[in-house]
Length: 546
Image (cartoon, rainbow, N blue to C red; front, side, top):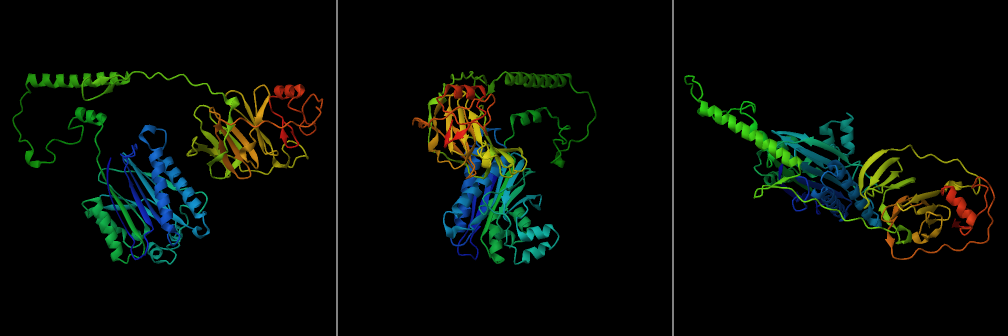
């Protein structure tokens, strides 16, 4: 689908224009979609509304360009990319709003639309709208997140009452107001000739939908339509900032498959005749006579040649050949021989200070890292299991966990007392990482039980679930801060474990963490016990992990 867009914004009667829009250059960004449009209406007073809308539009554009890159074909679902873009925009605006006391309460509406072939994807938060015009009929694609809109949907007031209500500017969902947001995402079928409109409430509150439909239908270009709509809103009062983004959808270049289908489809099968659009060219009736034999033979040979070409082209495609316009017309790429993987020594690396990978609150009892692709799995406080990329972006939601329940109190000194537990992870080489919530440490062990050192400079307050990836990166949930942290390998050696005091080993056939005395890492009996129990039980003693 070819997307031709035009846009116009105007402050109306306001001193500042807090609206912002973007028509994304998908070709320049090398995106795998035909078009992307974004619009935002900031709020917060002074210049904060402008900052909120700018941050939202810039973030959404950046995330879409990254996740919908043409080199990542098939990796990311477009609807998920839109949802992620609005979540990251929300996090950015929320961070800005808490940077200074005066900025509290700043936020913005946001509507983002992506056109991919004959499908339109729309994500939104707030009362800015998306419309679709088809054959003169205008359809609203988004449902306003506002108080009066909810009253209309509930049947409490009419559309006209909502338009005149003094509460029409109260919105119930916006970007940057809360720590997290779930945008509404939907998809629609589109056709060549359709018109897509994104607009802020400065337009939809001032111009009737019938007038919008008539103006878009009469406009010869999308820019002319956007200019005319903004002019009409100003003429009707222009009480708010006004922004309109208009996109005309045109038939794109037909694919080779479609062109071949056109060649082999007869006029009758296609549902039309060559003279259907020109009545004057309808042939006159003539006496019926047999077709010449030569014409029949030519038709058969043509059909046979076309069929043979299609069959041969299919065989070449299945064999891995690519077609090009210049000789040689069919080329088979040489197989790419992958270089042997580098051997990574995960045992002797230290770690830099961790940084926040995923800023949303999470539970402290789930953290895994896939050794195959590095994807991280955590659980939100609501119980939703989230899959993150190694860079921290949300890829998808998996399933819902049961709600968090309070743990039963444990005996004093027992493993798990006061809600604190030990968590263990292993890297692909078998090195173990033990997270101790009471000692606030992470200790690294070789597979044979020899302690390699303390990862003690991570500044942890309540370390819980832990995981290690194949490149040596540690991922950790800090239960006090409810954040996912990650610490990448560095060249600094691991800090040594301080030498513990003299302790005794309890001679019990079965290890009981609630009754056993502490043991020293240097004790052969202790190492033997740790090795044979598979690192399932560790005892905390005097702030040190054994």
